[in-house]
Amino acid sequence: KAGVTQTPRYLIKTRGQQVTLSCSPISGHRSVSWYQQTPGQGLQFLFEYFSETQRNKGNFPGRFSGRQFSNSRSEMNVSTLELGDSALYLCASSPGAPLREQYFGPGTRLTVT
Amino acid sequence: GENVEQHPSTLSVQEGDSAVIKCTYSDSASNYFPWYKQELGKRPQLIIDIRSNVGEKKDQRIAVTLNKTAKHFSLHITETQPEDSAVYFCAASGGGADGLTFGKGTHLIIQP
Image 1: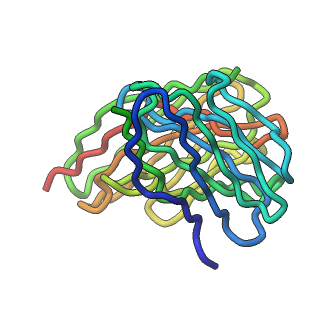
Image 2: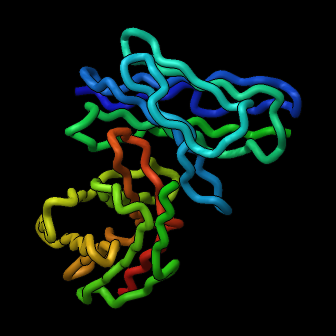
């Protein structure tokens, strides 16, 4: 099976702008989770979608949002970008419970200037 | 919410020796504990996982142990090789949702 794919791989944005990142999970996987990775905070959970519904949410401000489509593809959006939003954004797909294994995509490197 | 502590942050071992990385978690409802390996510039890769109904799991040179009572789990790598050098993350999840809470990571260095 093809792995998890993310687009774009790199982005440079300016403070105050908004950005949309895309994730295509492994075929047949219904759960998509998003994570932010930074050198200081490590890997932090943003939110999880299962069958188009947000099932779980991490401790991030409302500027971070997401959605999932009927084909399980997911997008996340960050509005009013801040310098501190510069990070590697990773998505992970999973078949869904009881099979919990999550497989990560290559990530989108977002730089906010 | 869940909190996962991971130690040590850096571990240097001689090639051929064993390495042990330890994690503790706070939420007794957590029931799934994966370990990921991340090489520089690459995505985290699932290397082994354990569920709360199992105490130990092995896969070749890698093993994971879980102590539910003490709420800690460990990764054991035997006969370490240069390609084992990477950052290793432990994680925990439970309660029906798949979102993972990660430890801060351990930078494993294999000395030749």
